[in-house]
Length: 177
Image (cartoon, rainbow, N blue to C red; front, side, top):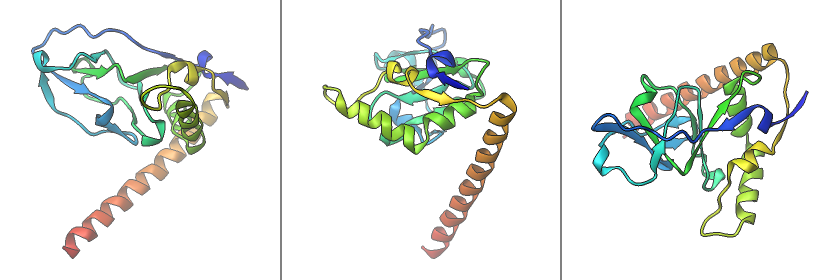
C-alpha cells in the first residue's frame, strides 16, 4: 500500500528540560551512517544554543544539512533522558504502522538520500538544507508488518556482516603497520 511519510512518522521538537548539570549533547557531527560517534558529557552551562531537542530510543536522527554527508542514526542509548540534540538534527519518530528500522532504511537508502540532496541543493541559502516538509512528502510502498520485519532482519544481518568485515580489515591494517 502506498503511503506518504506524513501518515507514518512525525517530526519531534519537544524541548529538553535540563535537570542535571551534565548531559550528552549530539550535534550533526556526532552521528554518521547509523552510529552515534560522540558519547561525551558536557556541562550544561557550556552547551551551544542549538542544544534543545529531547529524544527517545528508536527515534531517527537525520541532519537537515547536506543529506549526502550521511549524518543520520537510530537512537539506541542506555538512557535517552541524558541526551539533548541539536536543532539541526531532525528527530523523526515512526508511528505504529511502520517499523522504525524499516523507515530508517528507507530514509537512508541511496535513492532517497540522493533525492533529498537534490532538493537541498535546489533551495537558496548558505548551505544545502532540507526540512521535515521534504521528508513527509515522500511516498513509500509499505508492505505489511511481517514483511517489514523480514526486510529489517535481512538488512540488519547484512549490516552486521559488513561491520565484522570492516573490523577484520582494520585488524589487518594494524598488523601491517
